[in-house]
Amino acid sequence: MTSTRKDLHKFQKTGLFVFHGTPVKVKDLNPRQAYNYVKGVRTRDGKPAVFATPFVDLAIFRAVVNRKNCPSNYRSGFSYRNKKLGFRASKFTLDQLNNSSKGYVYIFKKHDFMKSNPCESVAFKKVMPFKLVKVTSKDLPSKIFIIKGGK
View: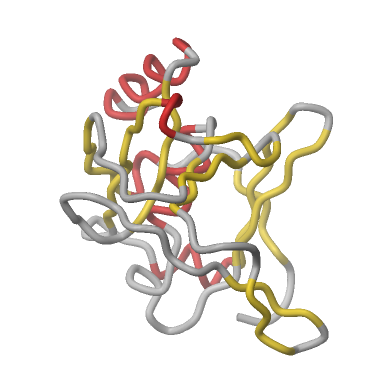
């Protein structure tokens, strides 16, 4: 485990913070509309919000595995079952990551967010991070299940 990931895990262990992973560096985060695909149709998912997670590894994963670092297409996801977080990505996705693949984990005070499910908290107003940490592909969780087939 990298020293950056260890330091981030120290914040998680306090239970006082939530995390947001993104490939871009900004001063603050404003609510944005989330979307899901229902039967192939892009559909609004709730009200515009800033989304965060109590799991720093999920924020790291989202900060690094994305369109910016995998411009030729990517397939990835996560699951949360039996209080365990799991990650998955295609080999093609992971092969696009290199030493310049980076992102940012925003650390927010938990009290600025409302818990919406075990993996997610939301804020419906602009929020300022407590701290911003640059992460790289070296900080990714070590166990990422490889999705078979396709890109």
